[in-house]
Image (cartoon, rainbow, N blue to C red; front, side, top):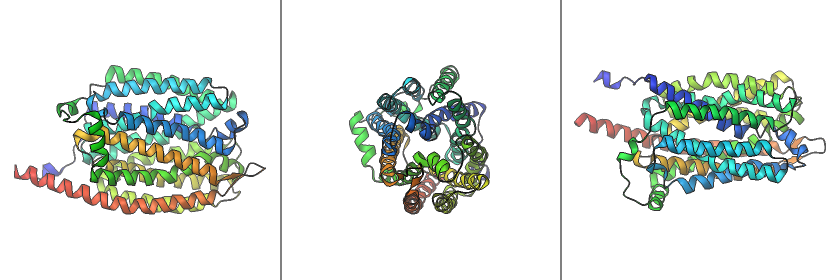
Length: 418
């Protein structure tokens, strides 16, 4: 009996899959995140206003959301490896279009194309994670995969911004295309087919499968929490670089250092946070992350010109709080859907993230104003929205955790009876 309670360990192949998924996430996240730091360059280069730049960020989110919804009914009907490669190829094509864009509208179209493919990939990655890894290990797996978020800060953003400063803002997108091509080759050669879910033949048409997933009461609770959790973050991110440069007094040449140091800490903390989620409870880690996020957001969005050291410290602590929420909540929510609905659930969840994030970025573009000297005004109001959504999400995740724990207890009783 005691041995049954011991957590399983990762096999060699599973470790390879974790590394590949993390590297893939690195390219996807970098493509999305690099746009925000480049805002200080793109807006004057393309003569775009803050609201127009908000639309550029939102374009990816809206198209990704639409693609996720359209694919949701089909995601559980294909080998997940083949599905992943198809959408990843389309993502790289869209990123290449970003690299050659020379006007606001050509970049807008490129971001839409990139979102149509890239926005679906995250849901496939999380479905693969839930397929291949026991729930008791998902915290540490998500910690490594989500560490790609920080790695994009440590490696990708500084290199991307250096290339942008050295040449122009197009250069980082060429970097992503080249790196992504290598990732695609590795997946093709070394990742086995992921088709165990196909043994559970769906008894519904794709449309009925989509409707079933979207209308299942216990799934709706997870969808609602996801929407709230994304809203505040998407409002903060698009204008963070402009705020750091023009309000906090960090030169654009030193901006990569801020992202790099924050990313190093978050990259180290990610796997530790994941292990803590498995050890002391995913809800407990999520609650701690919420508390840290609220405190640091209130400090950050109300800062004026300050020292470079203070900017780094605030960013580091903020990223640790955000990472704690992301890793623990993703691991917890992965236990909500059944195996037969997992791909559809993850696709809908990803779509809702993108759509709500798109609305949030657009709303942020309306709330904030750009002063004649380039300073971002009313950024504190964006912070208050994030604090409110964080508190609401904490309440919802409490009830989700209770439901997941109750289901796990019933499953253990059933296996013991057998």
